[in-house]
Length: 382
Image (cartoon, rainbow, N blue to C red; front, side, top):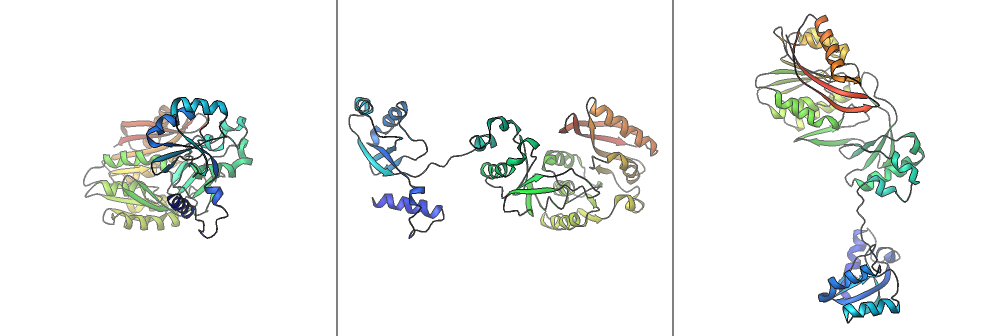
């Protein structure tokens, strides 16, 4: 009994309960019928009570010295006892306390299948953005009334998440911000996000950031060569610039953003990642800074997909007179997403008195809406 009480106390401590106050002990260690057998018969006993649908899967099996106590759903009938005697020969029926088995929930559907009407389960979010300890979900109109239940389920499925935000509008404005609603958790939105060896302090309610481009940021960084001068025209908190600064030696990356809050996070992130010598933060509108940086860069990153075509002329002016590489991100609708993107890009580059020499890479990155895609083209401009 002493060992059992020690186990009970450990469970109480884990649950944050007071040992002196035992009023919730039965919630943690509920009483149930049990089948006590010697350990050498344990495997056979578990198999038998499972076949008889007697075992209570919500409770844990007790390990008591040289015996096991298997939790049962109900008392044994005479028929149950006869079948057990055929395989176990010796056992004891007991009434005991058992620790609850912790249920590991792996999906929102699994977490909510008993709470939501079955016809609403298909409307649960299929994916979410995890930014540090914040989860961002898209709640469809069909489950709007259940959004707080969805938020709680997100916390249950993702143990490292502390706040759940629901999208409450489109990305808009010159700072590319979106409205959010806290639907679960602490409500804290200032986080530290990690990807590919870099850390970023940010607040997704104050700055633009998407974790879905992490692989794309690494891909671009791996293309940069020693001695290059690069500009990220819409740097936000620095994920492109800092990834390049951490990956490449003897480069200069100018990280430009008009959002002062993003710029403040950017400066902190530059220091935190130890790239002060390679990444240079610049606060301001890239259109007003173009005179200062005309003809300076070997490579430009134009990551403003909703308005990218409006800045192609600026990107062309920023490139060195002999040309360079442009990473162009845009939104287009199907069909022929990449063909449309290339046609528009080629036309705008021509208008800027430059030549699109070659498309070295193009890809549809992700679907952002019905028939609408986020695409990237890497082009050589002369």
